[in-house]
Length: 387
Image (cartoon, rainbow, N blue to C red; front, side, top):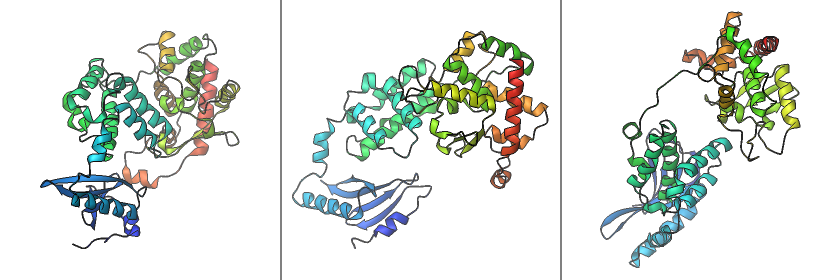
């Protein structure tokens, strides 16, 4: 069988498909191309009559030339009667789940900081207290499931699925790098293992009840959560988008907040016109800034945003538990705008929704910025007038 059949240009140009693909270079070496687009060097060989596979690392971090050198070294080891996996087996005991998680997430430069932080925090809180010091290769499906079931029993039916997914990525990395032989998370079927949360709509006040709510909110001290709640009202964004708001995303000259695609549910940049009242809150937060990249930072650490439940706890504290939520502002504001005859397209674009008509979604690229700016300013003026 011919060897060295690949070229670097072919490796770079090869596109992923719905199923994993292999590009063979000969001598057992091939480039494994996952549906996600990740490319990994692997080599197939036989040891004691059994088929084995070893990973040489990701492409292009490991070049074609380096992969061929590793393949030749593997064959030399086999000719001498050695086991190519022996060095990895010797070091496997030293890699704990805690270390594997840190190494994996540190290498995911393609993810947003907020996503990576949430994933690391989820694993840290729910898996590492019991499994963190265990060798990653020694953790079984039952070990992992036992910790996940603690979350499920606590009612975290949605979050437990995320933690399983994040842990699965760490275990997959550990397998690829020879620190584990299986991914135990892949052996857990979330639809069978975990319960399901009752789906409820986000509580939202009617326009008639809004003045009482705003007047009660005005009695609170000038807390960060109060300012965040007001800015949420003025911008119509989702609570998580607000808490992840960074100073670098604010364009004061144009009075706009540009949320990058990586933070948006629909994976596209979202421009938020900022009415006068919103800019006043941002200037107030600038005066309180303590070196964080976040406009609304954590009370305890400047490298983290405020708690995801800070606004909800505020609403509960002032007596509106079950009647209003941070997300509810979107419903209240859109109701107000629809009643006043604003364009449905402008309203939906401000809410960062995509039209149900897929053809229309593709061709209707208009941002409606002028109308949205006027709409948000009129809404902010009305909110201020009834506060």
